[in-house]
Length: 344
Image (cartoon, rainbow, N blue to C red; front, side):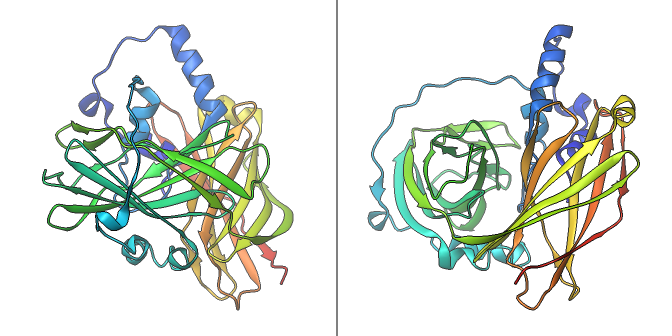
């Protein structure tokens, strides 16, 4: 799994982004904002890898949008069972999602483009929805809706959007995931999604419109296990704090602490997890992002698919990304693996 920092280092900013002059005080303020709340990209198909970098160094714009009322999706039949389309590309990550997802079936048409939300699910940590797009306009192979979901009462959120995948003439499908920062776990969440445009990243064209969706989801029930098991090395400690098991996924909460000598040398320090079980199964991780109070110690979470019922242990190997920032290079190191016995 490539972290945000690896992608920033790989980005050729001289060729891909036009530089602008920024006052030193603004650079420092921006750096502090980024350190306070950093969001890792999820590993999803056809992800727009340069959008993360553009979000860090770009300039945000504000737009006023008119709202309409969603049309019953049965009146505009588009594409259904979209989770299964992405499941084939993601090593079975979404196998259980279709069964437990809520049927939203809301559609709106604006500027000749119909967007329909098919299904959505809330696993107690993240909200994921699938949607389809129908338009006479050719959108190209590298297009998508780059608007994250808004969850009521969240202090902030991080998220990702897949690129649109063409499934037949004039019809495309996509998926959006958002991890809201809530003060406490919620049994029910109220979700708003307001796409502003469909963006073609090859031509930089925007197909604008007024779409607005709102719906409520109940959390998938699950069981939690407190862990607090740690491993340390090279001035960095990673702790597995807890694991939550649901019918569709497994959510791991973990944290990192970093010694001052490490942060004096490296601009960014971030931790990913390599995860397998005692049966030899390896699990694809979808990072949910994290937050920090001091810019160097972070609380992270990541999601994997529902683990094999026969497994009795999970083995976590922390993979640390050390970055000098500003595209100046990075290093990667692994800490010793941790075996966590599962409560069953």
